[in-house]
Amino acid sequence: MGSLSLRTRFASSRAIFLFLLLMALLTGCEAKSEEAASASPPPPPEVEVAEVTAQPVVLSESFTGRVEAAETVELRSRVSGYIQEVAFEEGELVEQGDLLFLIDPRPYQARVNAAQADLAQARSQQAQAGSEAERARVLLGRQAISQEVHDQRQSALSNSRAMVDAAEAALQTAELDLEYTRITAPVSGRVGRAMVTRGNLANADQSLLTTLVTIDPIHVYFEADEQAAFASQTLLTGDASNSLNIELGGDPQRQYKGTLDFIDNRLNPNTGTLQFRAVLDNPDGRIRPGEFARVEMPVARLDQALLVDGKAVLTDQDRRYVYVVDENNLAQRR
Image (cartoon, rainbow, N blue to C red; front, side, top):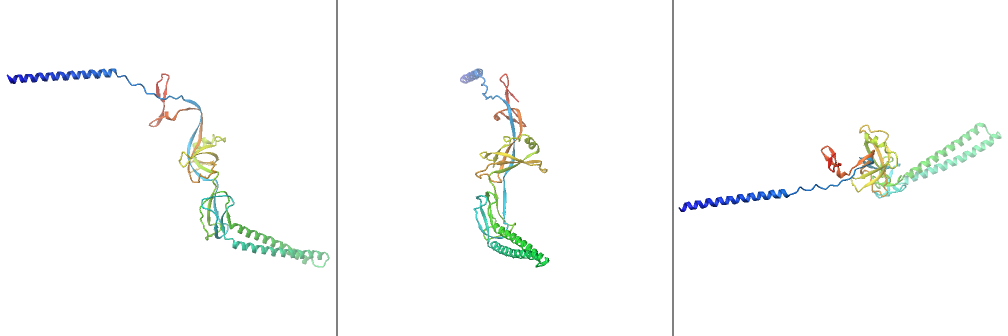
């Protein structure tokens, strides 16, 4: 009897426990259903809308270029001799006419002195020949000498004049050679390093002494493909259209305004490109030849172009699109 009562109590307790668990599950489902029913959908996201305007616009393309000096000079000596002085600091700015190198002038000064002496001698001989020719003319009028003697003295006078001319030319040559011992800057600009230093021999027309480049203005050369080149030439007519935006060294902080001043007269047959040149003001000399440049050049003009903020343009694989709000205030992809 005791065992039977125990089993009965255990079965009753189990039934009560299952009943309570079922009631808890049903209550939880009903609560979740009520929460789901009471939750409202989220509001639509707020987006900025901009009105698209149509107006004339000029399209530009970017081209790669290089900065070059307007004038580049390779200084070579015109006479041979030993460098006596290097009269500049390498890399400094120099003015036209400044002394850069001095070749030992003493041998050339001696040649000038010798040429001056030869000229003085030739002039003395000319004066004597002139006196004899004049005396012969008077004597011939008195029939005191023969015509042959008269002609000989006139010929001697002509020869003496030629000797004077030759002596004067030799003196000018010697003076030029002496002047060439002073090598000066032919243009204003920035000088490079001295390739021949003091005490070394400079050979005439062979030894490169240094290089000199002008700095203001400075040029930017770039090349455009055939299609862009011919499209741009229809726009590059006035001074305003010739203005170009130029970025140097890939640095957005180094933006300059240049002016197109040269278009080559033929296409490069190897590359199919046409060369252009822009001019930049460079009064402080900060722009140096050899720098990399990006040039923005106009290539087309549109009379009615739709201008859209760049932030609204999206990309999907190989095409770009925007969302347009229609009359029902709905966004459509285009």
